[in-house]
Length: 361
Image (cartoon, rainbow, N blue to C red):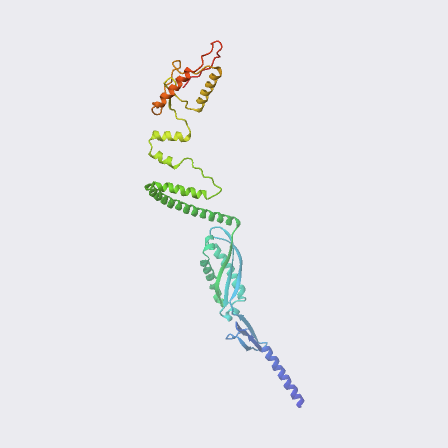
């Protein structure tokens, strides 16, 4: 009898142990428990810690109360300005009512994901391309409101929705790149023009200041020469001195023209007294001088002296100024007469060779 009683007690203890094991549940801190007894919702949500249920009668559903980060798959759409784009986003949400998340929706995660995708496609169709690229904050707020409205009945709260990336076609990317480049070039030209305007005003002020002191212009020129000479690979060429500029500023038009001819190397016609005492004009160009020299050499070779006198009429001179008259002119005339007296007598006409004569100018 006692033995049978001991066996019964041991069996009861084992049954109680098995019942406790099957009825005991542990709920974590970030979870809440929803109990359904025979398919009926029990009032009250089980908090974190140790709890007991009726085995084979109650069913405990644990709901995670943490914030869930769910990526929204990329959605293809056409914007309001007819641009094909591909947009993806990410959504942050959490469960605020565990009973509604279990009873009112089959799978709240899947439901939130599908609602986010449809809302994202709707936002793409209502927005312009510029809004998708630059005004994302407003689009994020609108997308959050669109998803949060039906999610409230599911016991889910939407914390934040962010548009991650907007993929554009390659042609649109090139067009936007050209637009940005043109805008940058326009701004650069405007800035350059503004700089030129300011520089011109400053240069006008500097020119006005230098006009009061003429020496300042020469000092500035010397500074420029020093700056250019600092570069070893540059060559500085000064075609005319600064003093010539000052002379031209003070000179009359006739004197300025004579100075320019002197600098350029062009011969200036002047009256030179001839051996007979008259005035003759020197050749104005190098070709005339060469012809004169060739005629003289031919006469020396033939032995015919060059006689200056009544046989050859002096040509009128076109002097720039008055011909020099004085002791020097009288000396040159005397030297010419002495050369005529000492010249050898001419040969017979039969032996003389015809010498081509050229008119004197």
